[in-house]
Structures are given as C-alpha cells and as structure tokens.
Length: 144
Image 1 (cartoon, one colour):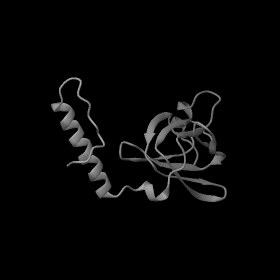
Image 2 (cartoon, helix red, strand yellow; image 1 turned 120 degrees about the horizontal axis):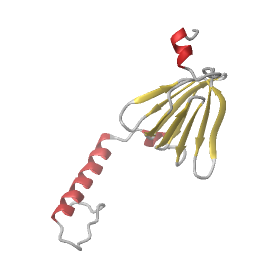
Image 3 (tube, one colour; image 1 turned 180 degrees about the vertical axis):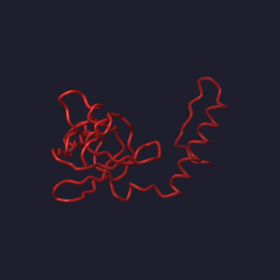
C-alpha cells in the first residue's frame, strides 16, 4: 500500500517510511537479540495493554511486563520470553532494555500467588501506617 499524498507531505523532507525495523534486546551485560529486518514486533505493556509496532511507528518509551515478545522476520514468527523492562521505539527501530530472559513458567503468575503477595503488601502498608516513628517494618513477615 502506497502512502497517500497527505501522508507523503507529513514525512520529513528526504525521508521515507522504513520497510523493516531493527529489533534490539539488551541487558546490562549482553546483547540478547539484534535483528536488522523485523517486519513487526508485539509486546505487553505495564499499563495492561499490548502494542504492535511496524516500520514508521511514532517514537515512544514505555514499561514492559515479564511476557513474550513476538516478532516476525524473513524466517517467520518468533517468541522471546523477557523479564520486565523498558521499550524504546524510534521510526527505524525497537530497543528493549531488560534484565534478561524470563522463565516461561514465571511469565504468568498464578492468582493465588498474586493474592498472597497483595495480602502481604497490604499488611505491611497497614503496619507502616500504624507504626511509631523509628519502628522498623518487615514487609516479608508472615501473618501469625
């Protein structure tokens, strides 16, 4: 599909929409993935939504969840399970900064674990609100 006249006018002079994306996944210690020609990338965002990125996408930065990153290149579709991180989108590329690869079993937290964590945090918050100045609060303490 060719860009309309209006779309052509909105592009910076001398620039055209890229036909593919450069996809990079970095950790503080290593480069996990660096692909020159991805057709699209899909990620889960911390705000509860997901995002599909194609060449020419508007620049943005967002927080990602521990979840699979799906992308397509000349050899087909791929899944890469990553820890939560930061997404940076530029017109010609996508960079994900993360702590590393995620364990597939950890990518979907079970509801009972989530509820237990919530209960523990709620108890800690309640204790902190009722604590006297100088008291210490153990957020990992089990209810007795």
